Image (cartoon, rainbow, N blue to C red):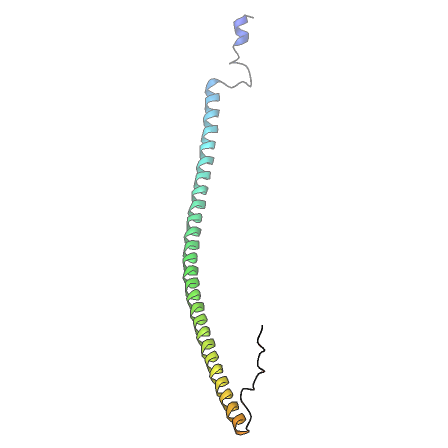
Length: 126
């Protein structure tokens, strides 16, 4: 056997020829290309869904912001009304207290009592 024939393995059984090797590599590339296209399509669908979800969330956010602004305005109005009611009731109470004091003064004057009892004279400090 010639030593150059040992290096040439193209005719051995079970060894692919260069053309078979190229076809096999081409089939691997085609499968990889199909898989990458499938992954790309799935990624695009997911991105589209995420864009839809973002748009939906943005719409809900804007609606909630509007509702929050309305609720803040309503709370401010209620606080203003409560303050007005409290102020009015305080004025009414003061007016009633004044009226009661005036009536008390009249009663005491009719009874001959001094409205303001005399307080003892303070002793001068030397």
